[in-house]
Image 1 (cartoon, rainbow, N blue to C red):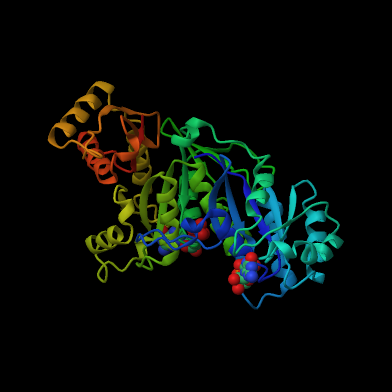
Image 2: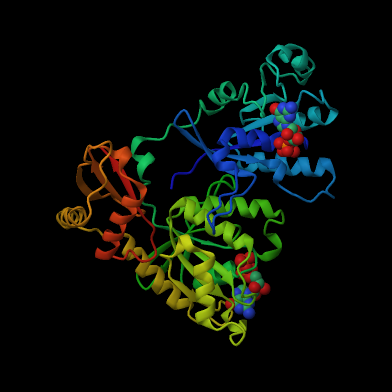
Length: 442
Ligand code: GDP
Ligand code: GDP
């Protein structure tokens, strides 16, 4: 998946950062997705504006701990912006007026992130007639341009976004449909499930090379591991190679980095904790991200050595896993113990198999037949009396696994019909471990 630049929204509490984030990404993203297994984060979302893809992070959600003194919370916002952001959006509150803390935040941003584009929006200007009156005092912040906005009404947000996304790279036409194959693996999961331990098990036996030393934490570290004549490229998430005490203590950083790694890889190993034996909201959130990213997936219950197998026999655990992650029903589920080494080797055999599956191509000729058979059994419903002509079916280079269907009227190939075609394709080849998508074009 392509890596998108991050826009960090910074400001005092209650100035409207999260409202602005919701406005930027559209309500579509802001609401909690009712699909089971997909719980979206309130303070992180992807957005597209003028064909530029980017991520928006409401840094106010960095640490939900109310006990934290304000300036400390703000320091972690600034720290986040410094480490991860491509651009920074500072938000002030027109109703509240200019605040001493606003000047202090701006001073910190200028000092710590001098090279990053910094935009200043003044929010809660719900009535355009009030722009001049309400923004005047904010010029004391010493910025050339203030962007008056109303997160609630949407006023001014489009102009602001036009300016912010201008330096971001435009998505190519190809990128819109399918990402370049990366063949990278991410080991993801909430803290303490044993990701580092699993990873070290592997490194312990074999040679590993850190491919690149990053300039910032936003550049992923890839670690290549040679095993039995094959090279595996892992994305180092949330400090896989760091000892526990050096891991990010701010939970949000590790969540963010996990999301980032999922996007940069095409195969996610989702690790769950078998000593707990339950699937938590946090597990579901991470699984939801794997689903959103469309990457391949293997689900691993680690710490199997200390799992209570009488309370929760394997078949029950498997059933619960399927129930909790219905959208990952393509993912194989296995157990490991990073402590004893049990089945760790098997996990890597499984990774081999899934990577192989991800490279499988159904020949064009065969796809033509599959399309013909599917249409013969059930043609797509006509639209306004006009039949929809399905012309061709072709597999794009992947992973991810994407099939391109060409149709006379692409917009009207109903979702349920697309699913019907996908089922036909899955009957030809399972693509174990991979979601299979259809892209319909003229
Ligand atoms: P955050 O703490 O900075 O993320 O702020 P929120 O987005 O939670 O907003 C704080 C309060 O300000 C909420 O009650 C919002 O409804 C309100 N608010 C946010 N944007 C606007 C706006 O453009 N106009 C008005 N009148 N109120 C707003
Ligand atoms: P991470 O935060 O997901 O990278 O988790 P770590 O690899 O740091 O492991 C967290 C804790 O779980 C450590 O105390 C590990 O020793 C322990 N742990 C990891 N894997 C296993 C396992 O398979 N069995 C048992 N019993 N403990 C494990």
